[in-house]
Image (tube, rainbow, N blue to C red; front, side, top):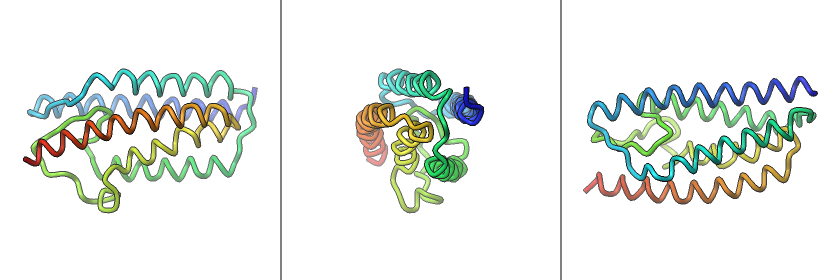
Length: 164
């Protein structure tokens, strides 16, 4: 057992659980206030992908040595995630929720249309590389890109409809 690897796995798992609690609270409040969910069918696939990624990291990485350069990249990605969540505030969710409010254009949204998806696109493979799990980085990185491609298309279509 590698205590640094176990600590990394626990921190990533706790972070994901905290994000889900925060996202679910935001989703409930947004829906209660008239927002609507779009393309909910893909959400189970995203949850399954992320859960499988976490399980794979735990199964194959609990005894690994940490790769410190990749850990520093992962930490930088988390700082970018905090900036993204802070910019969206109560509008951040893990689902596609459309409101009548104007889109957020501050923070990272000043520069990118989908900063959180860019972060996740890197975070999935980088999280595996922290533990030296190259195969998991490639497999889940590619699977995640496929799901993100689908999700971004659904979200952009919903936002175009809203703008009409």
